[in-house]
Image (cartoon, rainbow, N blue to C red; front, side, top):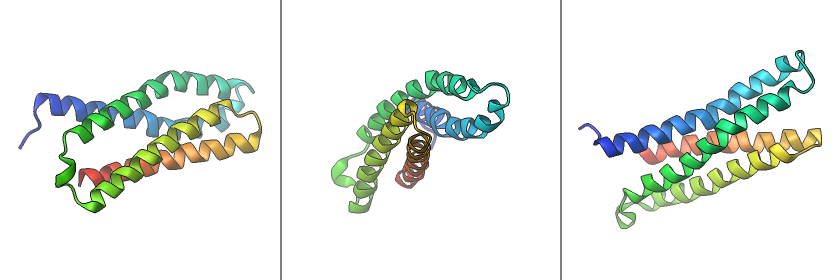
Length: 134
């Protein structure tokens, strides 16, 4: 059975936003080292440019995530599905907070720690989303 037009729009926006948010973090991580040879400020400039795409994508992810959940009947879901959903919501919040603090950190250790939190939580949210779609 094919998705309806509205369902296709919702899922497309969600997957596209996840591609930007999660995939963009991996691309940016791969560009940081080589960009330093261009200029010491290049990684920061790349991060700012990515942020202009990533934060709107994160917002769309949150909105479409709640939209996705609204299409399910809570009482009809298993305990496991509900538990995974709650964990996913916490992990999505951790990804956003990690990225937020990463962008404001000044110490190298803090930059690394918060970047790792953002990246790992983002991948975990992606995996949990696949489990929920099951």
